[in-house]
Image 1 (cartoon, one colour):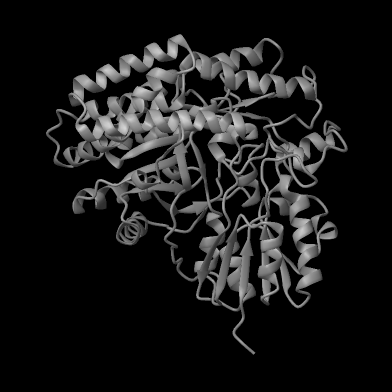
Image 2 (spheres, one colour):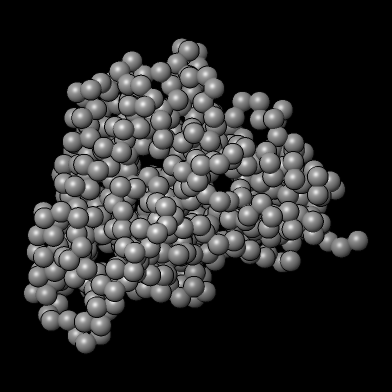
Length: 531
């Protein structure tokens, strides 16, 4: 008998289509699904692996395989190979897919034990609905180590994975120039906003995987060597909340001359505490921040001056993704427009609009259930915040909620133009912010900002020509001309890349007319950890 083996898998495709298992509003593309969904050809496109599965596979005491984006048939072929355990990770909208996969394991691999994991396990009665042997809720690394006879508290080994694949915008591939590594520093959040799935899934606590700045720095060094990158996305609900860790990381970067750059999530309270200057020195180039509403309805945003904060961040070269929630309890036909207008007027690089969603496991869900606000019979696959609300709101119907959501995305796009154009503007501002510094470390940082701006330069010609409105085209011309003043006339290589961008944009326009919703299905990816 061979060694024990573990299979960890995401749910099967196709994704983003209306069928027995899913809905078209639930894509496997984060930005295109819930941030730039109304920006058409200008929407950045990419796919992300199941990072948590890779972290678990790296840290279990048995050989493991991670299966990302399988078809149903590919999943069946894999389970027939004989695994001792099959772990299925799913979220609430993918309940039916997880159930189908568990049934397939019982049919084709009856000797395998089934582990259910992910936010979908917060569904009440899930144990009675899906065949299984174990349910993992919370820290999957500790759970699997305990199940398989290892020390749950052993040090974390970090996998070497990229943030995304298939990255492109306007039909122009970007992977070769944006080779970002993923850093998993911890899960959960102690802020415990009543609607937040992640905070409640981890019992309203923060679980650090990398506890010190030195540990984060050493992971960055390792990924730099293995992935040939100095740019990292930190997966952490509120990375700056652990301020001492972030400051130790910066100290080590400065001492060793490593101007790493980062994409992070953070709340307004933590940004205000550490300051924008600190973010600049740390190398934060992308910040996802929960604005939620103009009204102070969450403690984390108390006293925040978001217009000033977003403006100051962009002036320092930080791309800002501002997230807003629609159909909050104070929203009516007047106040919802005020909040949408507030979000649009921030002029952030990217704006996310999400419907308030009483997801299983959250305080919001429990409150609404007690109050009788949940609408019975709404399929799980439609409970995801980008379709229709599934609770009774005093001022909006389900049908109205979907229309309001799309209108909000369109307003941001029409007023502020494509996000990729805003990001080019921010990159140029960041380059200028460090142009005259005498600080040795910021001089290193200035070099990375120059590279970031020049990566976006070839896109500006296509944006001038194809921008969706007169206002956006005028804005694109201003930014293109400003790039010319700062960086000079394009080189022959720059002119070639600009012409190539035009051609690829035209090709993408043709594809968008031929393929419904310009949909792309991610390819199946298999990653072996000791198998």
